[in-house]
Image (tube, rainbow, N blue to C red; front, side, top):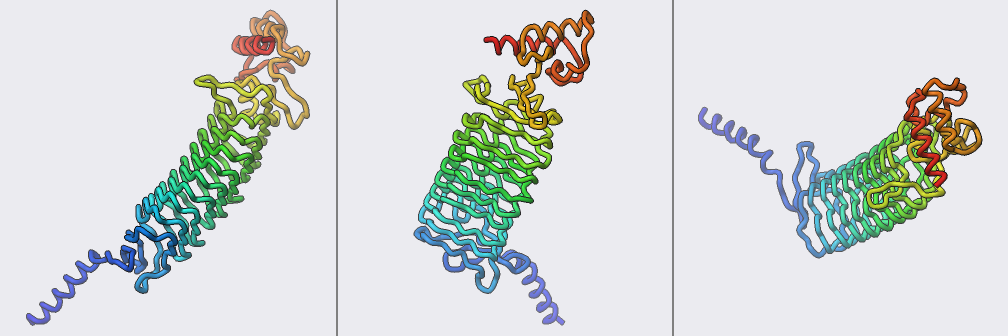
Length: 362
């Protein structure tokens, strides 16, 4: 009986402590065996490797994950191949590997962590294949990156994911899956000349494409879309913008130029939209821009109440007298007179029209 009890206790102790003894070393890799018998790479010791082919298996276990900080700051690395067996890459996994020029991401990688390739300053292109999630600052400051293919499965491009990629000129977005482009996601990408957004995109964050100095063409999809404040701020070549009907909101100064603390629009800036796209009309009114109405094929001057093709103090006088009940107001003029789009004729409308007239006369 004593032998039986001793044997039983030995087995129990082994079972209890075995989960704590999972860390191991294979060649230059530190790794852990997960509960599903797969492997997560947790460390790498070789400081001189230039070409890294991460193994698909270690001691018979499939490598499915690269942990946090594993290759952080490895200056020797120039080329990295991540196998198809890997499904996730951790936070800061390749952070500040300044000499990496090429990364091949396996077709089964679904997740890239925060700061994953942050400050990989020599990386020239990236194809995200079937990646579904990337972390904030994932490719921030990749100064040599020229081409990004977001693959087919990415749903969100988060905060500052590609910010400060100065040579980035070509971005291919997913055609069906992409829903959100986060705040500052592509800010300071000074080499992008044109962008084509998919119909699936429904949100562009604050300053998402700010300071894109060469950006001159933007094509929006036809899906429901909210454009946040400053989204395309300080893009001096973006002087012609067409807004589709299904845009639900445009934030303040979305297409403005900033000079110190002041905002303005280029003299030649034009906004084309549908008369049913209220957010675009409101933006035009606030910006002092006369929108080109796509559905009417003519430029509507908000504030031109007397229909003489210009906005003058006479228009402001008409509105003010109508507001004071001194004149009968023709409701057909309401579309041009309600310049603040609040659905009512008020002294504020007269004031805004007067301000617009003074600015145009100046």
